[in-house]
Figure: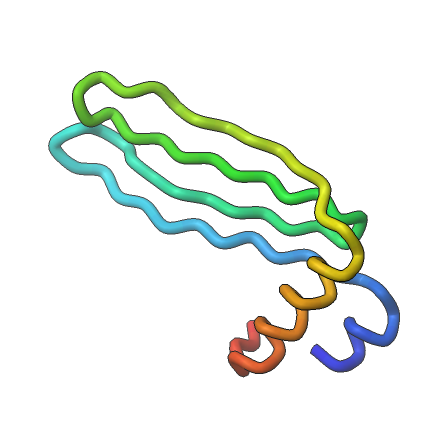
Length: 76
């Protein structure tokens, strides 16, 4: 992670989901090095619809996200 912090390259995608009684349900976050954060939530409970949102994070917020991930010692 330290090399990625130095070079400015950063990409993280977090997905958790399952197929069950209400179909394919999932929650997804995607962080990009340009500051874009994408969010998707698909829940078919009570015929709910998919929610998708996109925002741009400030450099300070993105730096803090990178720090939290680095401190968590999650490596892929």
